[in-house]
Length: 302
Ligand code: GUN
Picture 1 (tube, rainbow, N blue to C red):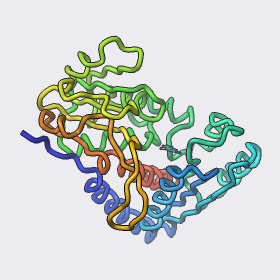
Picture 2: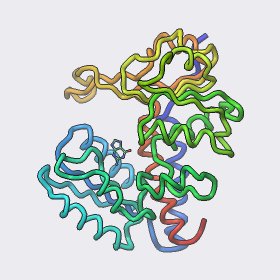
Picture 3: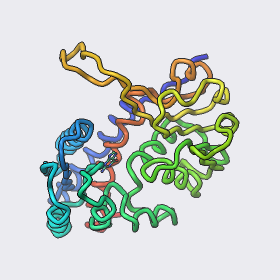
Picture 4: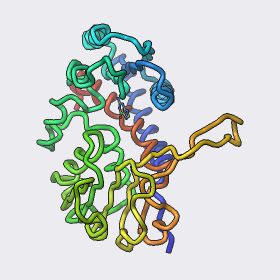
């Protein structure tokens, strides 16, 4: 039996419509809209396309958006000054510095300089700590894990008491999603195992998973025989495995592959996210949700 497809593209539309309505409502009642600044340093092609999409989405939702594009040789000091400017700008509720940064800039120093109350990426240590505590403490869950949890909830997958296995321990996906799934509350309350490059027998852990979340960055790592029949499989991998000419635009585009052997896995899993069109579209969507939340916190309406 083929698995149910969990389509990020469809869930994104549902959530963006919800955000759009709320933005219009707040604008009417309070005369303000969410403000988001994206800061891009250098010309990494993947970063350019992510930032362009973030700004386009913010624009569609009626946000006040600013895109700062800076040269590859920008100094750390200049970037810190820019962050300071936006920390003190009342029209800005979310500051996003696109990663990775050029090597002369200390990423940790930059992330730590963002006001935690405008850190809509959820990467500041204060927000990482809030996430660890859970419940009402959480202000800005990091966007990709938040998107994963939202997909699991909206797909109607039972999480309470479920065996969740997370493959990968990155600060952006593996560690935070593991932490979120073990908290009490909706879309969580699971028994969580994190496996990584130091794990002895990846396959045996994956086979136990009712919900398998794979964020390893290794194309095709998870084989169909590692999947428990009926499991929910969330593939976070976005691996560029080649290039092709787009039929739509005639331009060169990347060929993407996930961390899971999708064609074989979909015959065994109960539900599965495709790549592309699965987790990917959710990250930007949750960034918009966090920016709206930042404004609502500022207005004291949540
Ligand atoms: N680079 C890759 N993913 C992300 C993300 O979620 N946020 C930022 N700021 N940079 C990224």
